[in-house]
Length: 176
Image (cartoon, rainbow, N blue to C red; front, side):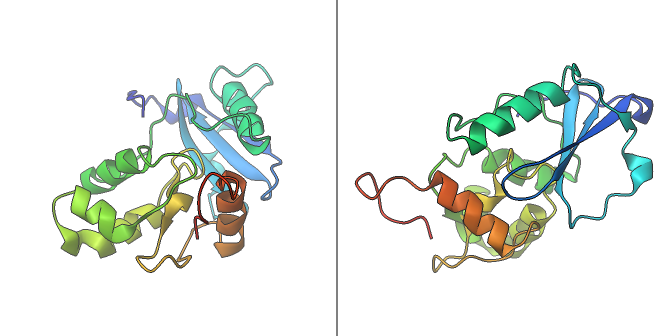
C-alpha cells in the first residue's frame, strides 16, 4: 500500500465502473484511491465528491488496472491507496495486500501474523469493512475449514473473484 496523506474532501472524485461482478464505485481523494465499493454498499452521495473525468490521475489508472485484472492480465495493483480505519484495521488491510494472487488465507492465520490468534474475530470485522475491495484483496480470506465466509460484496461475488484467480488444474488445487 503506497502511503499517502489525505487531503480535503473538496478534492474527492468518483467514477462508476462496470465490472464482471457488477458496477463498482471508485472514490479518490487528492492523489489516492480511498474506496472501491460494490452496488450493495451504502455510501452517501455526499461522500462522493464530483464526477471524475476520463483523465483523472487516480481513477483512470484504477479503471485500467481493474480492466486488466478482470481480463486475467494483472495480478497485482499499483495504485496509491489511502484506506481509512483504526490502527488495527489498517494493519490488517496491509496484510491483505501480501496475500498472493491465486491463494487464500484464513482469518485465524492473519490474526496469528498479528501475533495474537484470539484477534480472529477483529480480523473478520476489519476484512468486512475493507474500503477498497478487490484491490485490497479481502476476497482471498476464507474460513479455516476452506469454506467461503462473509464478504461485503456478497458470497457470489467472492466466488467469482476467487474463480477468476484460480490457477489451472495442472498448477494447483482449488482455492475454495
